[in-house]
Amino acid sequence: MRQAVVESLSRQGFRIQDGAISPPDQSSKEHLRELHAEAVQHQRERSRAGLERHEEELLRRIANGDEVEPGGIKPRISLVHAGTEDERLFRWCRLHWSIPTSAGYGRRLRFLVSDESNGKVMGLIGLSDPVYALGSRDAWIGWDGPAKREGLRQVMDAFVLGAVPPYNTLLAGKLIAMLVTSSEVQATYLDRYSEVQGRISGRVHGRSLALITTTSALGRSSVYNRLRYRDRVIATSVGFTSGSGDFQFANGLYDSLVAYAQVHCVPTAKHDKWGKGFRNRREVVKKALTHLGLGDALLYHGVKREVFVFPLGTNCQAALCGEDALQAYDISVDELSRFWTGRWLVPRASRNPEYRDFRRESWRLWH
Image 1 (spheres, rainbow, N blue to C red):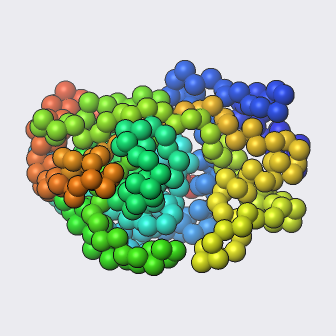
Image 2 (image 1 turned 90 degrees about the vertical axis):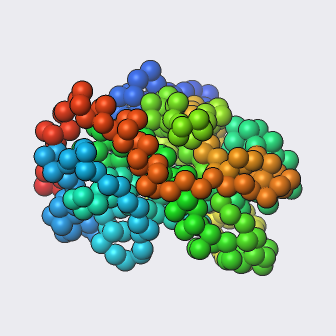
């Protein structure tokens, strides 16, 4: 098992010395894609059994370039429900991302953004519970310990946020990022979660969604940077992650580490209402690596991600610190879409017609 860990990290380009690892070349987006290639392929193979037989019908939900009329695009957003074709489409589409994506955990909202003019999917929005430790986010908000524990109830993280072809060529990624702040997303959160009782606390917090976070895995983001709706900044860069985590084990090695930890390691004690087993993925990897004599320094991979915050109200920071009730923005999908059409879609379509050449068949995962 120890040798398998060392060989896997080396194969991905990490350099191991004195119990620590150094990251491979991060100078370009292509190098970063190569770094994640094994994990992406592993995720696709794990999903193959459940999705391959549906690929023909799923491909029909993707537009050919000649099926898109820029002047007639009408975006709409719909909540994805478990066990539906929309859920299969969401899962299949996210397998095309150039980095492995999470399925989300804890509270979770998934949306498809579709073009009502032709019924084809334009992009995905996936929201789930935020991570507890994210220093750049916490510094931007101004959180102390007690305020953070309460305020995290009003935060979600976008684990998937982006456009699919051919709409991505028409800068629909900017639209999808804007729509995550829409009044429809906020209303869906209120309907789903504002009256839900906490499993541990037993309390109902009854608060609206105040902030969405996400990270850019391929260096500086051309989608989120300088993204505005009129005079309002949609997304703000607040810094970078620390460069630690377990993505370097997502190429199939994590499953082996789980099996190893279940035999050789003891889970950390936690609240009995959380159930039994390990606390999270990080604990599994940390304990397994330590038992193998490799040490948890291998979790510090050095690949940093830019952190963006999407405030959902004029007084977002004060609301998250418990100083005031949120003064929420109220901008609909239709309003945001009209702004995107004039600001980005029309100019892009007129000067770059390459979207017309896209064929859905090129998006087939399994042949």
